[in-house]
Length: 465
Image (tube, rainbow, N blue to C red; front, side):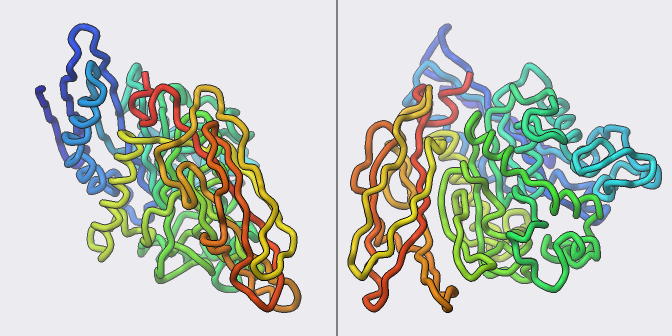
């Protein structure tokens, strides 16, 4: 077995090739990681945005040799080549379509709907911030991994996570698969880190202070939450507040592979009430078909589901700020999740649903509920990854306390949920026992997910061409 290593920084191109046991029949599988930064507000930060996730890339590179060797030992006759590169959307090739009063392409975050020299009605139209982020990511993919390079994995932080999902799902002004960015067939999956996936301007999220998210953002008050001393551009505020990436995230999760790494912690300043990573609500970071379930308090004194894989208790910039106290822990936790997804198991949600129980007295048990029926075409039951309740199964919910004291609603304790059967075809059954309040009766609303793996192999790599 021979190893060849190539690396250059800051535009790291880390290629590691290990020869497998095969000879002329050996299959070479290329994995092309492209890291996509989040919003940057100060000019110097924009010029160097490609460096945001270099430390994460270096941590991944340091473990590639052993990971590939282990994987190839199990898959003789296959060679794995991993390359890593870093995008900078602020300095990328611009579309050339810009407002007449903002011609400098590095200021793409300023491009609002209705700006002079443009004919726009929504973010995502040409001449807006949303369009420009998508356009430039497609340009960076083609520059850094020109065709026929394939098996591209986009690893996006914050706004970079949303735009990665959007480009992979061919999002245009009309939604998913309404605009061909020309790279969809070459993208194998998307990883999000503290992704700004959902729109932040709806009443779903409770902005700290008396003003709306968009107004707060355009006033410059949101900047500190993103770890920046300069204000966000007004066009970016519209993109963040008005456009949701949930549909794109769901499409990628179902049609390719998605890994949503989400988090909340005690972070200051916090732009929203409830569980946040500072600037982002916990449940804005992953869509309903993302693997993983958790709960978060709502503005209506109850609780709702947060989708995605909680990879630790970290603030938004811990993963990118080398000076943060929790940077190394966030970096290494993300590294381990990404490498396991590549080399061990890359599940998807096979089925998801919800059930509302009857009102149960203390120690009473709900009806038995069915989860899933059969695995999607080309998929098999996930018998490898741990859900929060069983192998390949996640369940979460809210226990409802009716009457005047609605604020007593709380997340259902996992110990009150029982998986009665874990089937072999992405299915199962479960129930809930109200075992916490001896003096009152309660109902609950429960959400469940079953997982599947590709028949070709549980890890992402082996199923790729």
